[in-house]
Length: 424
Image (tube, rainbow, N blue to C red):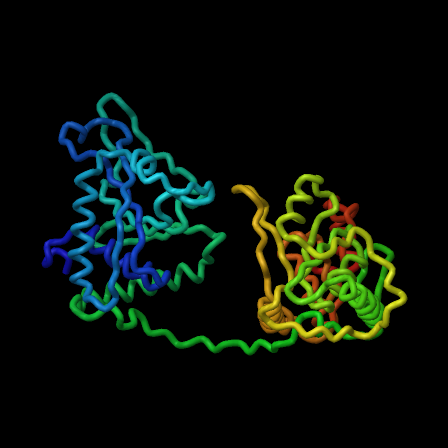
């Protein structure tokens, strides 16, 4: 189909990928990277060396147009880029001068490649040549789709950033690309707004609009264990209710933050639950943080209170304060590591927690059958995954907050887990 319209295989595949990326991103104007061999001169054919250069191709996708129109547009763009392939990529970056971010490529996030060099090892006079496989330890871009013809077939591979995508997503994306290529090969003049693949709709899971903290109910069952400290659900709920009244009196409420800077303990869990009951969002702070970083996080988040110690709330009622929260109200704020610059606060809403809880109940807890579980939490609450401990409390199970002296000793941790049948 591409040859009939005066196009190369690369440009045809590039156009299909542009359509796919436009469909996934909802953007119609974006850039894609590719690589040229840099051997457009005959005298370079037999020279050993690396002459490759990176090109940036601008995509402009109109999904109401037929594929043939987009193919012609992509071909013009590619020919213009190849005509300037001698300009080093670094020079282009310097000329554009984008705002730099060490976690991203400067001009594009995705690449499309067509490998058309021979696979066989070259025969070089006077030299013994062997191929050395190079391990792929990191993803060059967020997403790279690489094609190669071999044995009369067109093969494709996808390299992706696992922080952004999982294998199921990539497999689904590959299915969509295959369906798109099949469709345009059969009828390249049809509007691209038509669906590229028909899938059975996945049923949506119902998410009860109940905030996590309202699902923690009083009972005589053990709720939290930390070393020798054991609290029942009645103890936990009563202490959290009293503290929540105190926090409300001191300014806590919806759309406000309370920093929790307590050490690993049952009191830390009480404080977090109390903040949620007060309608506020908790900001977890590790007491071991350097003073400079702690002050920077507090300055960025601007909490109304900082809990370094658990205040005495015994004078307050043990009943729930009854603060109403909306699913879109913040439940907690957690900061990124700051490895790419200044740490950034990420807001997680009550609706997000409710959705996660519904998923964990259906996919993880239900298959385990009836009975109470013991969940051993080694992660600090400053790590996002630690919120799963709260999910276990909301479903009536037993949360073991592993003490620091055990958490940092692998042998002690194994012994503790075996002795308490914790699931870590």
